[in-house]
Image (tube, rainbow, N blue to C red; front, side, top):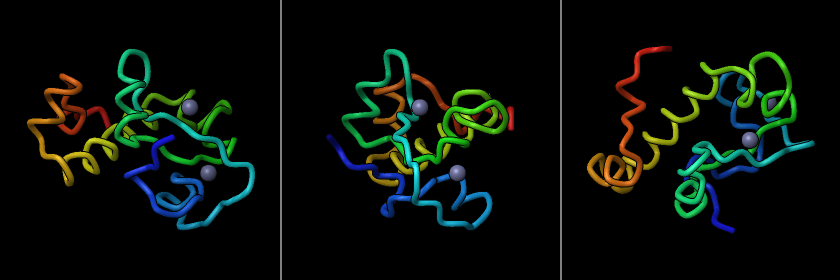
Length: 103
Ligand SMILES: [Zn+2]
Ligand SMILES: [Zn+2]
């Protein structure tokens, strides 16, 4: 199991980023890239810990809210590119989430 390159502490990524709260109970692992890109997410540690509410409950959560999902992908791309650069990201995924202005 690879470790996340998106966070160092084991706490809910969204509670920390959006509310500056450290939630450490009931965490679930979320692969930020899914479908055919899920193995890549695993290989590079593009995953975050989320509390159940922010992971898989109706409302603002990774599996119910597409803005939330896209925001996490932008965060993943930024973390990846800080380490490996933009060209490698494009070669691996073929998608530039940072250019997507849906947010
Ligand atoms: Zn949370
Ligand atoms: Zn998930």
